[in-house]
Length: 168
Image (cartoon, rainbow, N blue to C red; front, side, top):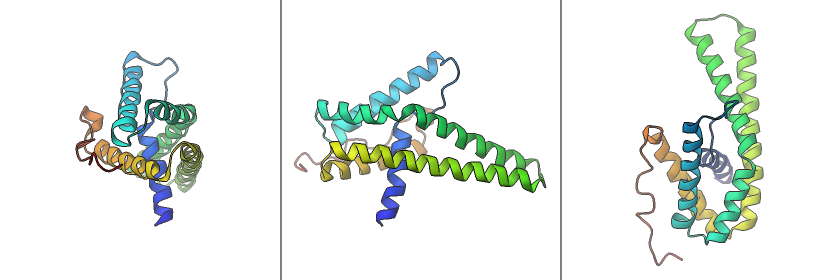
C-alpha cells in the first residue's frame, strides 16, 4: 500500500505542475495554460489542503523548481509513446526500434518517478503528515478530474465542495 502511495503521488504531482514541454519560444496560449495550472494549484493548496498563503507559496516554489526538468521528462515520455504508436500503427517488425522506444519509455518513467520522489521529499518538509494526506487526496482528485475532461476546459469535479469545515 505504501508503494502504491509513492507511485500515485509522483503521478499526481506531475499532473498538477505544468506538464507540457516548452516549445523553443513559448506561445501565449501555452503560457496562459501554465498560468491557469499554477492558479488552480494555488487554489487547491489553500482551499482544499488548507495551507496558509505562506506555506502554499513555499510548496509552490518547490513544485516550480522541478518544473523545467519535469517538462523535459514528460516530453521524452511523450516522444517514446509516439514512437511506439507509430511502430504499432505501421505494423513494423523492427524489433530494435521497438526495444529502443520501450527503453526510452521505461527510462523516462523512472526519471519521472525519481524526480517526483525528490519533489515530494522536499514538499514533505514543509507539511505536517495531515497536510501531506490532504495534499495527496486533493492531487489524486485533481488527477482524476483531468482524466474526465480537464484538457477540454472542464475542471475537476467537486473540487473543494466536499470539505468538512470542522475537519482541522
